[in-house]
Image (cartoon, rainbow, N blue to C red):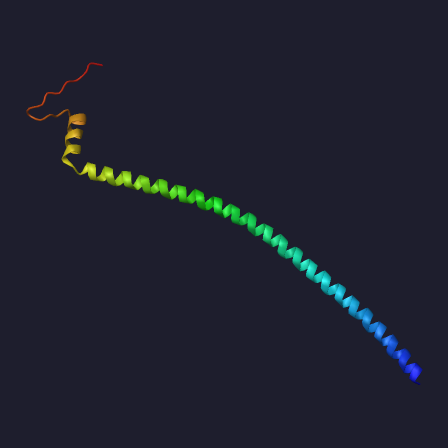
Length: 108
């Protein structure tokens, strides 16, 4: 009877070892697949990050340009509210002059 038990237990051990090997192979394959998925996702995210950084630089450049434009507009707004602007427009468009000024016009 002990020989039979030993044969059965040896057979059971072999079957357990085969199952264990199969499960280890399956686990290894799943981990390898997971690694591939993470790697592909990482590459995709890096590419997207580069795109976003380029877009951010372009937007920063546009912001600087708009800020410069805003400064120019503010300067123009201040100039428009001065007497000098009013005099310049009166001379250019209406041909007016101060009492002590003489305007010369060129013939076309």
